[in-house]
Length: 284
Image (tube, rainbow, N blue to C red; front, top):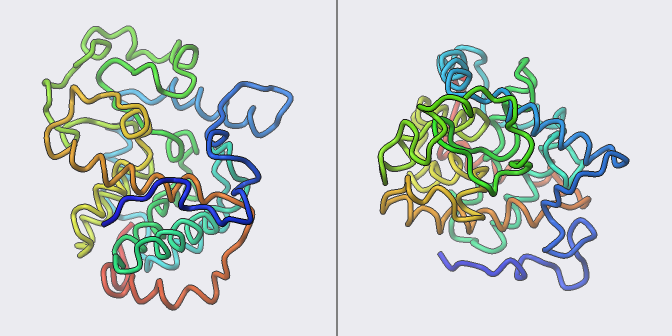
């Protein structure tokens, strides 16, 4: 797989989302801007309530996979009802973002059909928000719980003030409940669609390669793949996987725009990939 520079994702005649690369993920606080206010409120709730106990409770609830029986494409189409409240870069339904990401990967990596499918399904776990889960427990950047929060987390300086884990000496140190270089697979992440989708695909015996599942599991872990934090918890395998997740980030982030793909026209191709790697009715 040839790794791309983000600038290669652009059409020469347009700038995606009406702004250059360095203006994506702008989280400056502006209460006069309803989108910025919405994003901040989502993250403040996330950083207040995402604790070790909360995450374990959501795992107990969601990882029974007895909430829905449905094919992958049916769940993806439900994302037409979802607008991600944590995203400052787009106000289009999540199904549009899914096809934007997948198509840009397909163009850049035409031979890697598993990668195309990752682009399409990476956010499918957000369906939890349509089944009663608050968005702050579904969307947005993820981070480890059970150890100190890194400085690069969005709104880090002010948003964790009321999180009780910050006052728990078992959880508020550099390593917390973990061992040095234990590997990210032993780290409990804040609850969201990434971990859910990884576990759901495993549960349903998907034949996607392990690297695909890794991308899905950590694509929202921006403090790690964008800022280089938490490397003290990573092992050698994580360091290799980091390159894959960073490659995916270029397509997940920089393809957000108001241009809507022809979803009806593209659906047969992506259905063929679903039939290849995640066929039939799935347990959600």
